[in-house]
Length: 142
Image (cartoon, rainbow, N blue to C red):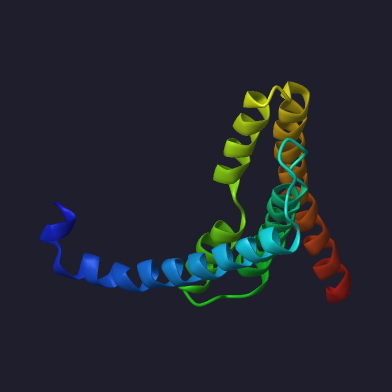
């Protein structure tokens, strides 16, 4: 059965699409604000994008623990904040473009370091934040 054959399916998805779009706009505006506050020097390590991605991943770690293990959130909270706001805030597409620009500018070492450091730091941030959130919640429950 196709989605268009089920009359309520598409209608039920519009609220999700709307909150993801609204959250994505808010997250992208926050990322743009960070870029304005801390402009990057061409050819140098892109610290602003690095810290936006790492901090966004840390927030994702906290958020996922809270909404899956602590709080029964409304069905639109996760798409709004997780997919929308944090998806719009973190910018792995810009990360990929910056790696390419650094490589094209004959900054292969910086490009490789940035590529590896961002990936490792983002994964460590999401894991570490989730771990720390669980520890804090366990401590508070005592």
